[in-house]
Every structure is written in C-alpha cells, then in structure tokens.
Image (cartoon, rainbow, N blue to C red; front, side):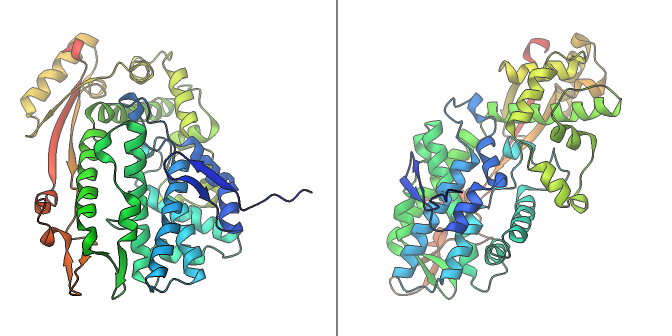
Amino acid sequence: MVKSNKLKIFNDPIYGFISIPNTLIFDLIAHPYFQRLRRISQMGLSYLVYPGAHHTRFHHALGSMHLMQKAIQVLRFKGVEITDEDSDGLLGAILLHDIGHGPFSHAMEHSIVEGLDHEHISLQFMKELNTRFNGSLTGAISIFTGTHTKKYLNQLVSSQLDMDRLDYLKRDSLYTGVAEGNTNAERLITMLNVVDGNLVVEEKGIYSVEKFLMARRFMYWQVYLHKTGVVAEQLLIRILKRARFLLEKQSELPASEPLLYFLKNQVKEEHFDPKILDIFSKLDDIDIMAALKEWQYHNDFILSELCKMIINRRLLHIKIKKEPISKDKFEIKIKKVKAKLKLSEDEASYFVFSGKLENKAYDRNNQNINILRKNGKIVDVAKLSDHLNLNALSKTVTKYYICYPKDAV
C-alpha cells in the first residue's frame, strides 16, 4: 500500500497556498463527513442574485483554518501562551465549526431537523469524529463549546471578531463582487493580543475594526438579506413544507433516500443519535436540486409552481417596508390570489406571506470587541471610535417584507 503525503497544500484564490499543518487535520479533511462540505453552498441561493456566489463551505472552512494558523503565529510571537495541544484544538475547532450545515445552509436550518441549528449538529459531528479519532478532538470540542479554561481560545473561534467572520466576509465579498464587504483580515490578525485572558485588538488596529464592522453591515443588507435571496430561501422552505404535507397524504414523491428520511420523519433534538447523524451526512445541495427538478412536473399545482419558480428564477414579487405589513393589505393580496389561482386560504399562503429582516452589525451586550489602548486600558470599540458612530451600528435595524405573485395581484 502506497503511503500518501499528508502535508499537502491547497491553492486558495484569496490567500494563495494554504498548508495542512499536521496529519490529524489531513485525516479530518479527507473524512467523508468533511468532504460533504464540497457539496454544500456557502451562500445558499444567493447565486440567483450574484452569479459568482457558487463557493462552498469547504472553501470557507479551509480559509478559516488558514487564518487561525496566522493568529496562532501572531499571538505566540507576542508571548501569549498557546501550547501545541491548544493549537491542535484551535485548528480542529475552526476547521469543523460549520460541518453541521445542511443543504443550502441557513435557508434549510430548521426545515430538515426541527428546532436544531447547525452549531448543535456540528458538535454532534465533532463528538462522533472524536470517537473515531481516539479522543484527539477533545481539546477542539472544549474550545468550540466554550468550556476551555482559556477564554481567548473560544473567542478566536466564536466571537464578534473571529476567524470565521474574517474569512466569510472576505470570501463572500470576492465571489459576489461586492467590494464594500472586503476586509483586511491579515491586518486585523496582526493587531490581536490577549489581556486578562480575553482577546483584544491593539489601538492602532481600531480603523481596521471599524472597516470590518461597516463591511459586515454592508454585506448583510446588500448580500445576505438581499430581497431576491430572501424570496428564494422562503420558497425553498415552503417547498419542503409542501413535500412533507403530500407525503403525509400518501402521495409519491421521487427523492433521494436521505431526503425522504427527513421529509417522512420529524427529527427533533432528542432523536438526533449517531444513526441519524450518518443519514444527515449523506444529505447535500444535490439532493435538494435533484428533487426540485423532478417535483416541477408533479401533479400537485403548489409544489410544481414553487419548484418552477426557483428552477427558472421566476420568483415571487417582494416589497420591503420600514413598518409592519398591514393586515388589510395582506388580506387583499390573499383574496386576489385565492380567486385568480382557485386556491383555499391555506393553499394561497404558500404564495402570499410576510416576515421581517433584522440586522445588527455590532452587539455591545455579547462578547464585545475590546481595544487595548497604549496606556494599557481596555475600552469597548464603540466608545473609543471617533471615525464612525459605531453606536448606530449597535442598534437592531428591522425591515418588513411581503411576497406575492405579481401577475395574480
């Protein structure tokens, strides 16, 4: 048997060459659970708005790991204690932080498994891999769950200025072509330090932090919460809802075995055991798109129409308002759709629906971004900033939307 070279490199369009630091990381990347991320889109259905947004969770996980290697190097140079065991834990935690994402990421987060977010499923994957890799991910799990004694290790993986966010903003900006989202991740990393067990940014990096927070705000309104992307995601959620309804009525639906399993069974947190985890690991974007291509020809009008909307990008019309959608306006549109398409109230709700979008670029109440001043004092970035009013970015902005078929209304 020929031994493979486990210290390979990946060529990344953003950072250039990304090296694999050790054999454990190589073996994790090579595992089918992780390889599945090649088939999970990083940005769901955003490619319907930005044609270049076809990059995957696999890209993002490797990029985040690369930035973590840089952060470890910088912090060690500044005298911060990061042992080899800590380093392995950090790299394992950041590599696997998104492994629990289902098909089309956030659009499907609560549709496939009821009430379970991707973080919980990521943890289940990590625990299962820890068993298979003889406990070598124990440190990674303690960092990921925030139970490690060194708080700054968890903050590098999950905080308001972590390697996850630094990579996805830069990566999503590149692949969408939205230049406002571009951040100087390397510059921010060189400004990191640790004081009293917490991650801080040195004062000379404050403008880079401001740029990062502004970029995050732009990306949310311009990309992640783009109205066309919102419609597409909501349609996908309703397609799965309709498919479940039809299966309960004993209708036949062509789909892959893993997808049919989650459509026919209401899987909740308490049911999510290793057997179900293994079924989940076989589910990816291809299952969903293959199902949509088949279901567009189904004799159920609602399922067929919803699938055609996504396949052919003929989506519902969406209006976004600053105030909640009035009940009267909503009822008028429902009545028109019922009459035009000859549907019941419940059936019409697949085509007319409303909701709200929320965005907060910086949360002052949760894991603040702290600035280390030259005099040694630690100050929240929103208090210290004089270039931009970060207090405004700390407020939740809420917008309201209504979706409906324009030709029927």
